[in-house]
Image (tube, rainbow, N blue to C red; front, side, top):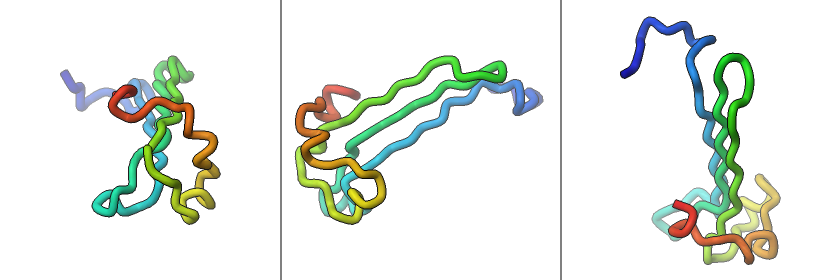
Length: 83
C-alpha cells in the first residue's frame, strides 16, 4: 500500500532509463536499451542494465544521442526475451 505520509527522502525509488532507435513508435522505432536503478535508505540497492536487439537499424539521430550502434546491439536478446 502506498503511504502518502512517507517522507520522499525515505521512500524507496526505482529510476528507469529507456533508449530507442528513434522517436516514432508508429513508424517502427523500438527499445534498444533499458536500465533500472533501485534506490532506498540513501544508497543504490540494485541495478539492471540490458542492451536489446531492436531488430531494425538504428536511426542516425538516435545514434547521435545515445551512441548505440547496430553492431553493439546485434548479439543482444530481443525485447520479447528480456520482457
